Structures are given as structure tokens and as C-alpha cells.
Length: 262
Image (tube, rainbow, N blue to C red; front, top):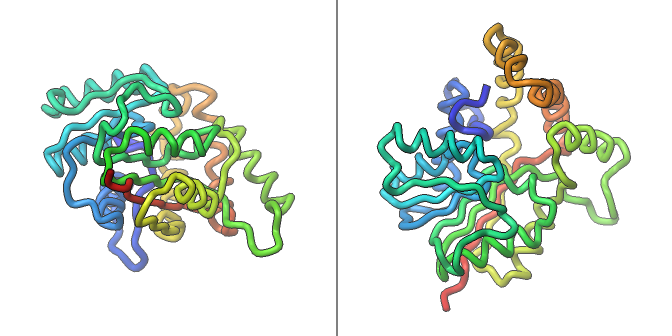
């Protein structure tokens, strides 16, 4: 269902029809363009999955890339794909904790986190580690699932919204979510500069329908049973994600900033 890239696809309004895989590549390209990234020398892909973003960006900019994941299976698969694609000399993957990264301070000029922030139980520590390993003048990009921003006078989400998020989080083994405004406050507290945010919920809205259709195909169903119950459980919750997007509760948000020069 997901292919080499374990993230949403980008579907611009009134744009041409495209496959899921094409939309996923477009997502990487659109995020880079939106963030103003035109070059990089060393990047880290935090929560890399099987490394699709790392390999794509390394090819695009000719940079080195290091991906980290908690999954030994994902890291092994990512390294195998880098070898197959002739990138093993400058693209590597390892098992590491995003909240305690095994890198020296200021190691990378591009910090990339595409749909991993929602897995982080401590968002402040997560962002703090991204800032620590970012070189002065480097760029930090987070693309993540959030819940909607609270409106003026609200102190929490509505009960029905919390119930829906609880179902999604239990199925995908996710901690509590935060809002885009929460991320902005964390970025500001870290002293980051040129902070920009965006909501691309409409641009990714078609993705869940496409993934659901793929899951219900003959090959998709066979793949689900082969993958096991946890994957089946996740597939069964896909309509809830689609519902969350449709009512404006689930948001596909972006935030980027620059680490100040010394």
C-alpha cells in the first residue's frame, strides 16, 4: 500500500491525477520548495522508515544522508535499498532514538522529519534534539499529523474529537497529539528564526481514499494478512483518519525554521 515512501502524497487542488507513488515523491519536492531548501551537504532523516526521503534528497542535492529509526527491520531494508540504488557510499541508516540521537552537536545542515513527530511522546525533547544536531544556519523541517488548533476560549478538544483521536492513537500506537500552535511555541522557545507554518490538509485529503482502495484490492488484502494483525488493525482505522480530516480535526501540518548563526 505504501511502497518505498511511508508518508502521505501531495495532491494539489485541480491538479492532474497521479498514482500514490507519484504523489509521495511530489510531497518531498513540494516540502523542499515550500521550505526554501535548494541545497544541502549533510542531512539527517529523523524517523526515516525505509529511507525513501533520504535517498531522494541525496540524489537531488548530491548530499550525504543519515536516517534513524527505532526499527532494525526498517534500517536493514533502508540500507539494502541504498545499496541497490548505488547510494550506500553516502546514504546510511541506523537504529537510534530520536529523543536521544547519537550525533554530535551541529552535525547536519538539513534536519528532516516527515510524519514522525506524531510518534514522539515528548514533543519538546524531540524538537530540542533536532535543534541540537542542527548546524548554525541550518534548516529544520517537520511535517506531521496534528489536531486542530484550539479556538479562543477553548481549553481542550471536544469530547467527540478526543474519542476519535483516542481510537486512532490506539490503533497506530501513537502518544497524544499536539496542535500546530503548540509546535510554534516550542520552536519560539528554542530561539529558532524565520519560523513558517502551513496546513496542507486539503492537499493530502485524497490520499486516505486511495490507500483504502489499495488495501481492499486483491493484492492489498493478501498483503494485510501476510503482514499480520497489527497491520490489519491499522488498515481498519484508515476510515477514521479520513473522517478526522473531513471534519477538520486531523491536520497535516508543516513547520520550518532556521537555527541562528553563532
